[in-house]
Image (cartoon, rainbow, N blue to C red; front, top):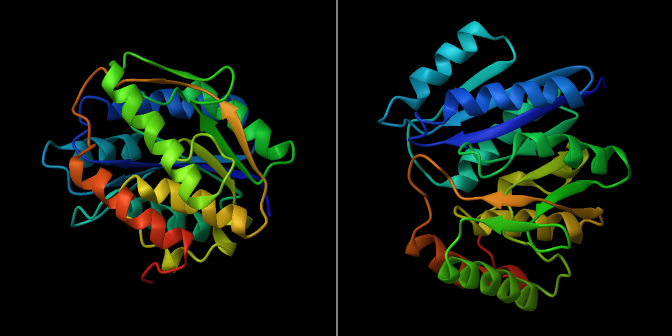
Amino acid sequence: MSSAAWVVMPTFNEAENIEPVAVAVLGALQSCAPGEHRLLIVDDSSPDGTGELADRLAAANPAVEVLHRQAREGLGPAYLAGFRRALDGGASHIFEMDADFSHDPADLARLLAAVTGGADVALGSRYVPGGGVEDWGLLRQIVSRAGCIYARAVLGLAVRDLTGGFKCFRREVLEAIDLETVRSHGYCFQIELTQRALQAGFVVREVPIVFRDRRRGHSKMSPRIAIEAFLVLPQLRWGRARH
């Protein structure tokens, strides 16, 4: 199979960000991904017009594709729909990233280099040497760190940033981990994917990144998402997740 790097980017109410982030992502892919590259925007019927803006981008640039979903079901189902489309489209490497510039498009090259250099999954990590966060308050830093520590302790994994959502997968990883049975909807989805990759024997490498708080728009984090992670993690650890 020829090299084809796809970025899967879920959106909900990202009208302020979608055009500049798409331009930045496509520029980064052009520089780092030889062969075909594509940005797949997965929009959950954003009421602010994000989907319509994405359609205009796709009409102007054949490297952009838009997948419209009728219901807002959460981050996990949006990514799963995007992964299936990327695999069906022949992607050899699939990225996931946010649409609000919290993830720097320039780091796509470093994640891809880690995978082409021997890893099966490259995970942009805030909590390894060289990584970090910017513009976060103390409480948010404590909650994020505590969440990662809790996840590592419950699951018995050595990955330091289990909640990170900036990743690059070889297609073989997503084909092997049975996407149809992934149950998490919120940010626990990121933990579940990494756990499944490790359980399947794949190599996960953490690549240091600096995570920057969004400048425009509103965060999608909510208490419900945090509660889901607290409840689901023990089920993932002891094999009681509902499929």
